[in-house]
Amino acid sequence: MSDFLTTLVSRQQEWLQAILVHLQLSLLSVLLAVLIALPLAVLLEKYQRAANWSLQLSGILQTIPSLALLGLLIPLVGIGKLPTIIALVAYAIFPILNSTYTGLREIAPSLEEAAEAFGMTSFEKLKKYRLALALPMIIAGIRTSTVMVIGTATLAALIGAGGLGSFILLGIDRNNSALILIGAFSSALLAMLAHYAISYLARLRLKTIGIIFVTALLLVLGSLTVDGAFFKSKQHDNTLIIAGKLGSEPDILINLYQQLIEANSDIKVVLKPNFGKTVFLYNALKRGDIDIYPEFSGTIVTTLLPNSGFAETEPNAVYQYAKTQIQQQDNLVYLLPMQFQNTYAVVVKNEYAQQHGLATISDLRKVEQSAVAGFTLEFNDREDGNQGLKSRYGLNLTVKTMEPALRYQSLLNNETQIADAYSTDSEIKQHHLTLLRDDRQLFPAYQAAPLLRAETLEKYPQLEAILNQLANKISEQQMIEMNFAVKVENQSAKAVARQYLLSHGLLQE
Image (cartoon, rainbow, N blue to C red; front, side, top):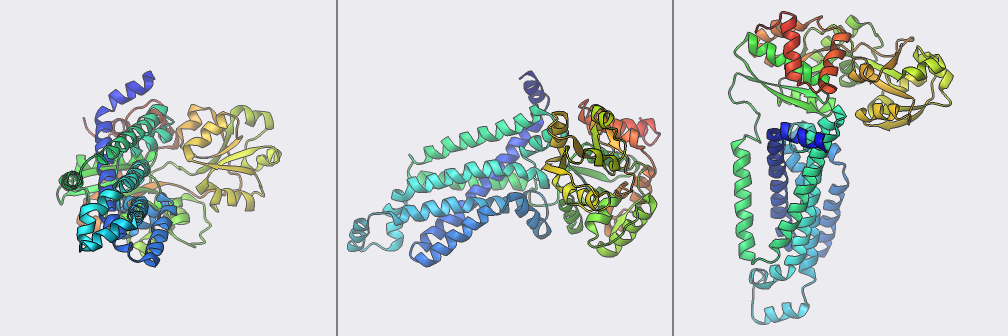
């Protein structure tokens, strides 16, 4: 509990900002869903066949995994709050549409006959009594949508939209329960407050509810316009957006880039850390929503260049191929790489390695029948991952797939005996793990280097010389130490990056 309170106090400003963003995203999504679903339900009530199709379609939208929907939206509308709101609106529509349609259909036929006898038009009936009678059902649908949207909005952090999901993702990556609890409890508290606030609306008059609705819509749209939510986060033309994947290492790298650029030019850099997936950043870069992000040579070859068939593992050959092909394919420029190799690796606990005589990946044959491997979904499906362990090493391990941060916890709890890793992970040092030698050269080279669009380099040609100051710098051990400082010692990535640049003469006090 003390860790929770200490972390909350130290990150109070971030927490308040995350709550504000979470409220913006959730509230606007629900309001827009009401604007769509309410008139649609009124219209469809007269056409039962069309209503059935519409309800089925909106229900199908809810079955699409939210992460998949976000991934599909990025190439169309980019990253940030806009794709998040589109996805959340899609999820929020069905409960409101279904409850409004049901509420209107359940109005007693005798009331309808009486209204017609008095010569009321459809609009008059709607205004005088139909919406009022259906209001409890409508409010129930809005309440359900709101609670669901507040929970789903935590995924917004994966595409740079912020919110309370930032705390959850960072907590998972850093194995920090306090951060996870801050994000989870805050989201749950918002959902509870929203539940009771919306229930209270059922006691109010329709006119009052309408005024509250319009006021809330104007306020949230005003706040999003002020912070530039639907536009690139650039304050002026001389600004670059540098993004990084989820994790301490990408966070350190983008801080290195920022500090070098700002120290050696008049360019302002905005950082967007902790994106979830390679494909999110790649599509955002091609669209121009971001300007630079650090990518690994092996990732370009195996993931961004489909069906390349490139089989070399020598570092310079991998880099040159990645540089040439990604420019031909996407007109992206890949600058010079750093020294360290953050390639895939296979690790076991030291005592397990000593007990079974494990030094290389080939040695895993000794424990193939008894050991359980904890692999990430990505590693399990890759040719330079578990598929390669099967084809090149002839290993058919029993595998449990899990999120990256959980595989170390599973290993330490003896739920698994083998895990995939990156060769510069701080956990290798922290937990005294044995990194098994890749004796059959399965894993290609993974050197980090800035990836940017050609037009960005044309506009800012000085970037090449500035960022190439990091070429062939940072050894694997130095990267492990920096990751350890951020993930285990809880130092900021900004401070760790600055200390490296200062100590190596790349930055002046």
